[in-house]
Image 1: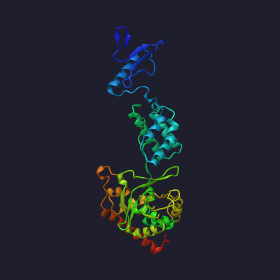
Image 2: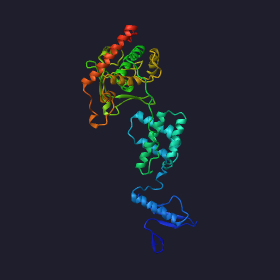
Image 3: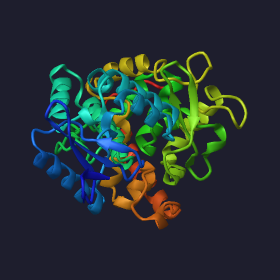
Image 4: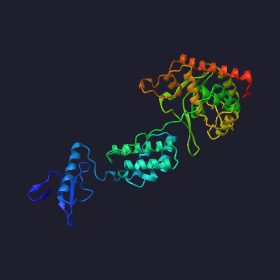
Amino acid sequence: MANRKGRRRRFGTVRQLASGRWQARYRDPLSGEVKSAPHTFDTKTDADVWLTTIEAEIIRGTYQAPDAGKVSFGPYADDWLRHRKLEDRTRERSESVVRVHIKPTFGAGSIAAITTPRVRAWRTGLLDAGVGEPTVVKAYQLLRAILNTAVDDELIRRNPCRIKGADRYDVPERPILTVAQVYAVADAIQPRYRVLVLLAAFTTLRFGELASLRRRDLDLTRSVVLVRRAQSELQNGRLADKAPKSAAGVRPIAFPAELVPELDHHLEHFAGAGQDGHLFQGPRGGLLRRSNFRDDWTTARTKAGVSGNVHFHDLRHTGNTLASSVGASTRELMTRMGHSTTRAALIYQHMTSDRDQHIAGKLGEMIRRARQDQEGSDPPPSGT
C-alpha cells in the first residue's frame, strides 16, 4: 500500500488527516483485519515509530491487538467459572467471592483496565473494610487465576496480580487438647455424639468425612474405619456426598482398640439401620449437619471447661499432634490425614497396616493413662 507516490512502506501505512494529525494503520496478523493505532500522532515520525514498535512485537511473538483487553471483566469472569470443573461447594464459594468481593470493583470495566496499582488498592480496601484475611486471600487467588487465563487467551500481556505475599496468610496456631480434655468433652456432649468426638480426635477425620460414614465403613474386628467419601453442605441447605479431593483421600484409618466398646454401644443405639445406614445421625434421625451439631458442641465444650477458641476441627489437629508425639512419620501422618504426596507413585500407596496399628495402639495407651488419672480423682459421668 503506497504512502507516497513511488514509495512503499515495508509495514503498515501512515497518512495525514484533515486535522493535520497523523494516523497509523496496519494489518493485524491474528485476524487479518486492518487496525488503526488507538490514537493519532502529532508528527509523521511519531506514527512511523509506533508502527516500528508494532512490527517488532509481531516479529518477537509478543504482539497483541490494541483492542484485545477491551473485553469486559464481569462476563469474562462468569464464563471462566462456568468452564471450571469444581465441586458444588467450591463452585458456590467461588461464585460468592467473585460476586461479593471482585465484581463490585472490576466487574463493569475491561480486563485491560485492571492494573497492579488498582489490584493493590482493591486488596487494601477489602482489608480496611474488615473482610477477613482468608477471604481476601481467596479473592486475590481467584482474580489472579482468572487473569492468568486472560493472558493465555492473549487478551492482556501480563497478569497485574503481582503483589508479593497476597496469595497466602499466616494461619494462627490452633489449640491442642489433651486426651483428658477430649474425653471431658465426650463425657459432656449428648450421648449420640460421644463417639463422633472420639473418632474425630483419634482418627483425625474431618467433619464431612465423619458425617458421611456408613455402618459398612467400620471394621471393629481390625479397629479400622474406611473413608470413602465426604459430605458437603451447600448454601441452599442441600447435603451431598462427594469424592475426596485426591486418591489419597480414600483411606483406611486404624483407631485405638479402646474405642471398640464405645462404637459397639453407638451402633446399637444411635446409628442408622442396615449396612448403608449412617454411623452418625441428627437429633431426629436425619442426616447430621453442622447446624444441628454446633450448639451441642458449644454446650459440651463449655461444660467440660475447654476454651471457647476450640473448634470441632481442632480435634483433627489434636489427633495429628498426638500421633506425631508417638512417633508417626511425616508420610504416615499424611496418609492418616488423607493428603496427597508430591510423588504420583505414592498417591494410591498406604502405609503398612502393622505400622498404622502401632500408632493406634500408642494412642490407646494414652487414653488408658488419661482415663485412669481421671478415675483416680473424680470419675467422669457416663456418656452412655
